[in-house]
Length: 460
Ligand code: ASP
Ligand code: MG
Image (cartoon, rainbow, N blue to C red; front, top):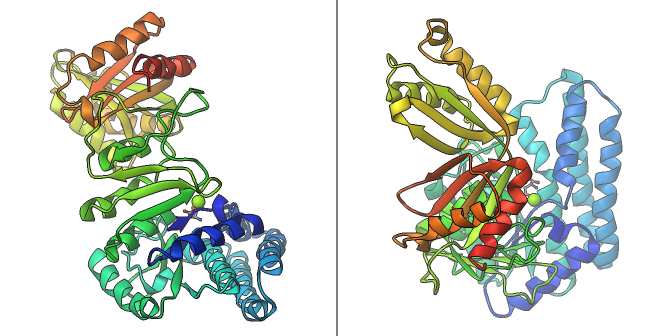
């Protein structure tokens, strides 16, 4: 079970989490993974930034706030003897924070490596607290630092796990706890290199921690406790009648999370996909809710579209080549320029007769995309082999997802007819041969209507 930041955001929420763990600990061997208390990671990262700019005061305020938020929980939920044990351990972490920030402010820089140690201190503190809360309720539990379990490469800030080593280490470290029926409460977000240097798995990476550890332990299930009731058919802010989806496949979940739906960290799906371990998305604010099960592809009753997601701030970029520049060459140059910067594309279309390549990117990446392409095609543009890049700003990319559309005629027709009836113009369209999703671009101002029209057409 993994609990996210809002699920452990204050004493009341931590108590609710302890209740959930207590209830389920009777029926299963539990391993708990915990995020930092909501807002703490942001606060830590900001403090490091300020300190590295030479600000010697900002982090002192953050230190007070960090101590206060954790202490408040300890005051409210821990027995006197647990407080005596835990308060010095929390103070020790606050001390680490202080030493690191003071160092950053002196040398006026923060390296990615040092940032990882600092930014994941919130997880260390929340795991110490939650384990103590469980013990105060008579449930045997200990805080475990994931740097002792998850072995990663040394891409600080966005590390990837080395699964074989992680599996061996995790099993060895957790076996004695299991024998004593003690629940490990493990820090999300962090891991360590072979040399023992602390790394992080990227923002929001505690989901990833949970599925990595679930895979390492060959768990029966991974439960992600969050603040929504499950995966929805659409963003409820766009479609009020959006519903919870009871079951989706790994591939559908991957697709949804790539396009920004609040499902799971996109990377988190891989580890469980390999071991075919089901993942449940559940709401810690409504633990009785059914939630969504993400698993191997499911035999759905109805073929067709299952969920719709959208990226409302995107732009379309068109690169047109002249006859002398072949399309494959044009595409190769374009994508290698983007890949060097790891800029994701949302939709790609080609019209080879015209030698035109069109793709959508996040609006936030647009400036960088233009700069990279102008540089990549500098010479061709000078000699007029490539016409100037065209950009259509304020576009939304809408993605209709459903594994069961494969081989079912008429789905795209219905979706696009619904858009036509709503008077919405489609600027670009793409569907891959896996038929897992249909993506299309519309004007940003029409995204809400577009999502609603398709949602209504398929009675999601
Ligand atoms: N606390 C980390 C973050 O805010 C990891 C997580 O919450 O999943 O990015
Ligand atoms: Mg989080």
